[in-house]
Image 1 (cartoon, helix red, strand yellow):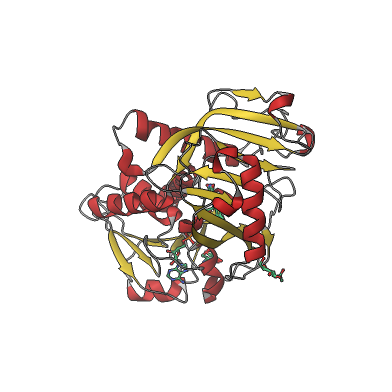
Image 2 (image 1 turned 90 degrees about the vertical axis):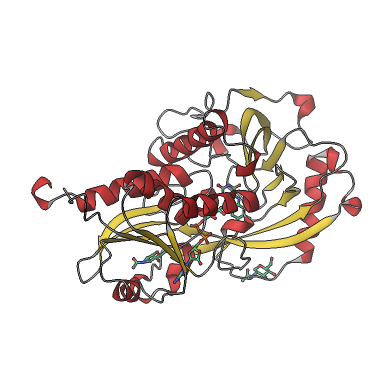
Length: 370
Ligand SMILES: Cc1cc2nc3c(=O)[nH]c(=O)nc-3n(C[C@H](O)[C@H](O)[C@H](O)COP(=O)(O)OP(=O)(O)OC[C@H]3O[C@@H](n4cnc5c(N)ncnc54)[C@H](O)[C@@H]3O)c2cc1C
Ligand SMILES: *[C@@H]1O[C@H](CO)[C@@H](O)[C@H](O)[C@H]1NC(C)=O
Ligand SMILES: *[C@@H]1O[C@H](CO)[C@@H](O)[C@H](O)[C@H]1NC(C)=O
């Protein structure tokens, strides 16, 4: 055990949803430790290198591994629920409850949503029940649809600021700086016990951590004004849960407007808005959600491009290879990695942060106990 007067000290690299959530989870586990977040970008910044502000975002799981990915998403769903229902955190958090229609253009066996092994929809109870949409509710060409009774929608602008405010309130220090390697970060702060790497794609440019399994999946969205007819639910439509042609409509809570998406362009780093793609997104979303009215009447607030960061699935059955691992720098300093959340960084954030902190605990256990 570390003596209470000499608690371990931590550096977290990255201040996206993952770095901020991981630092807060670390704070709960180590209330007396010095914790510092160092990052090039913080909430409020808008850069193609910083993915978190560009997310939709909602909770609509991609996990079907009957394993850790489902666990991370479940834990995060329940954490949002606890924050809203029990901790008395109100509108300021930027998360709201809402139902959703998921419409699929392929049969359920091909939709990539049934859990490996069980063949079930693992989130049925979690979202308060799933109702199969009736024939007459489905748009032309759709094969089936599911209504999620209740899930979460996130105003990423409000939520990221809320996370940052929590970080500051809990005595976590923040430093804005770019590092080209974890070793150079350590060299500046040699009393650090352990580093946590939540740098997402940025790590591609870290010289000592070049992870060539990491690649971007470009996502384009359009933020539009809230229509006068309230939108009652979120929508997505796609052949399968993960598909380049996905369309979605997420009304954000707290005056966040409506996010229309989307696209998934693997390996594409372009930060330029593709206006033809924006036009197609608006047309498809208006067809999906009649409350939006006609595409030509939408009030466009902004066209957005974000890069999701995926790890090549190292196991063939894995959808999205989040990397949460313990490693050591060449000088022996432990590093816990938590990156590669692809399109699920918000909905898996608290679960993956828990797992990262478990690895921190393990790394700090006295060698005798290993
Ligand atoms: C269009 C789109 C829609 C999405 N929709 C959803 C959704 O509905 N639900 C959902 O759960 N997820 C969604 N996502 C995914 C989600 O946005 C990401 O998984 C999440 O934002 C990843 O967060 P992060 O903290 O890992 O990375 P980032 O937000 O990119 O943060 C990386 C941090 O690391 C810092 N950094 C990196 N390298 C260095 C360095 N060398 N030195 C210093 N600092 C460094 C950066 O400055 C930044 O602070 C969507 C993504 C996109 C693009
Ligand atoms: C840190 O994370 C990035 C991904 O964000 C990864 O590419 C890199 O290898 C990691 N750095 C180290 C030192 O392991
Ligand atoms: C990347 O995406 C942009 C915008 O949709 C497109 O114009 C471009 O052709 C794509 N590039 C590649 C290499 O696919």
